[in-house]
Length: 276
Figure 1: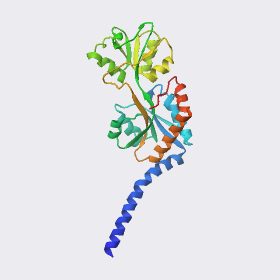
Figure 2 (figure 1 turned 120 degrees about the vertical axis):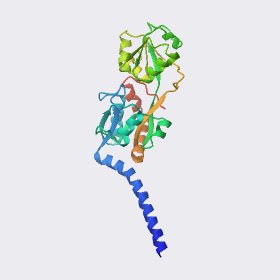
Figure 3 (figure 1 turned 180 degrees about the horizontal axis):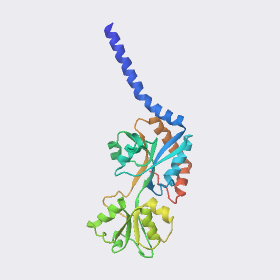
Figure 4 (figure 1 turned 90 degrees about the vertical axis):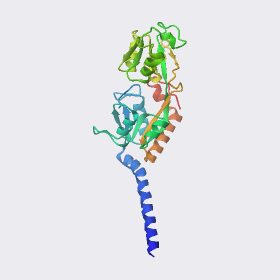
């Protein structure tokens, strides 16, 4: 009898543990639904995706919230040194300054290495593929066959950026004397538009948002040994065990993509969406 009771007790305890482990999954979504709002984390200075409460990701956050029948609450935040820090602050733990976490964070690289190093979060629903491109003033640089065409040219890049790292490191630093560094890629692109630069290396979305297809400023694919030409996908992230919220957000994203609304959101900001 004692053996039976002990076995029964162990079974009950195991069942209770399983139930307890599953409760937060539903409880997280229930809490969001009952609050009536979806808290969405977006980067503060990431034009054309999010900047001063405007951009592609802001419009996307609004569309996702509407799909879920919720009111959008935007949580803009400054980028930290690494994406892992941003995920910790805005997805699973909260910032030491007192804000966050959000229910979902947008513009997260959908990268297997990032996923494996951040087990507290679920990264999913890639909605755009970003790439690095060169845009030139066709009057200043009439033709572009290779990166050699940039020799002696004033080329703008954003400080502490992929573009800056690639160009400054190219060919043992052969372009360092002519590279001009700006606080943002958008500022560099406007300087190109005003005639102060010959070219700019930046993300394609940044270029498109400023020039919007102007034939006087053509775009070019530039091959760098350390940069995959296919680019990188961005998606969203929630807490690892928040499976219901992830499932519903994935469904909403699929519907936005299939209906063409996702492409229209990008187009409003002059950018062509590139689906993964």
